[in-house]
Length: 637
Image 1 (cartoon, rainbow, N blue to C red):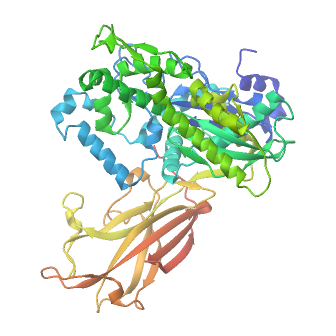
Image 2 (image 1 turned 90 degrees about the horizontal axis):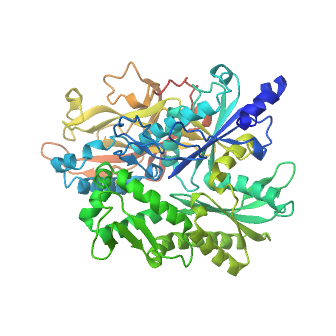
Image 3 (image 1 turned 60 degrees about the vertical axis):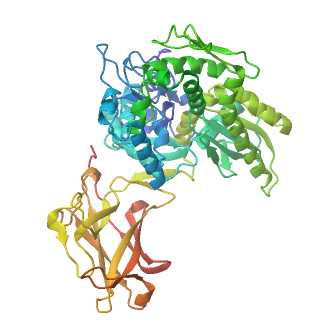
């Protein structure tokens, strides 16, 4: 029985009454470089640290590890039938890496940057170049879809880990699911994470008694766990009520730092946030990227492109990727990276084939490169110094708190926390402030363990996630395009050139994330053409669609039987002088007219309360609340 996971031991040793009272709590920490999953079967809302289990069996050839690399490949498998995710990749696989960071890409400028990267990688649409360099291997998928495919693999092994909870039992036992996100993530990235999780299987279809899907920031989750485990290890006097501490969650992509105050010691240990979280993309992968740039400069572009097989593919697809040779090299580099410390000796690394015997101008000898201490430190310094800056900012915020609080400890967790160089750099800074650096032995899994505690105890300030049950949109006229519009929608207006009539614009989509602490809000443009003789009042219909978000209709003409006109917004612009609107001079046979550029804002709060607001500039033209009955969500797959 001792060889069984804790959850199975408890299932065999508890009474029937306790089994009936138990619930299943699942925590998912999808990371830039590694992903962890924890689960627990608590009775009540008090978390015990030894009740939390970590998924470690990730299948054949994966090894038993508390985290699995956040890597997936869409390349063909070899005869060895690799799983093509985690650590089990075929020799020639192009692996998608660092996809989490791409969930945060937002705005026109970021999209334009991706397009320019792609054009550069494709040598300005030289398709033979793309084919010759393996460009046909990149996935035609969005970052959200890649994360969904990866989490589907993770989900399969979670189900195996909780095998004692059979499908029949899962239909009756209460379930809570907790997802972690960086502290400074915006709505778009949170929504993409939610979409990927629910479509991967973390949903009501798998767990019919799903009660709550909870969202917790990575530093908060890490703080919950780290404070408790260090208090248990160091004794009752380690943290006192009213004392503050800084939590630095140094991960692969982002480093999040925030400060907490101890508010309660018994019966449950409780903390509250006292500063604004700060974060920056200065995690351990940026050391890797600095090394790669150094290596490119060292070897030259021609050799480096052969070494980094995925370089061209990565540019074409706008995804970060790695091929076999670079994976072998980076695995070796990571070993040295973790051990690197102040005053470390120079590091020698062997290049993979076909460069195992390369000699180049005394900088590569017998296929071996030398990274001097100064070079290695230059990879680390920008990241380590930024982390120190983030911690110092938290200390200053604590000093500005009006009530007298004392800061004694800084907790360092996350994969980057294992770096000796980072530890030494932080400690040098803290020593000058007479502050202590605390690093728990289980720092690598502190976030996912803390997320499990968060799900067990469910504080009053918890943030829950739910899915919008339907799509909401409006019908608009749009400038006609032979490429994007149906010729049957083509109409001519007496004022403007050819238009496409009644095109559906969906502002909120079914399945979109709704957070309990803030409404889902989207604003779309509404353009109304006006003249001296045309009426300046009217209605704007609001449509709802209950079908799949991936099959939203785009024309009113062929969707009237599918969509529901459930509300209208009335507008009246008569008391606004025409001269206040934008004047459009006549073009050819078309008369002069005025354009009222309005904005329609939809806010969807929990419990399906839809708030509608129509504005012209800063003036509210119309507003209303619609309390729609919930619609049974269909399976999005």
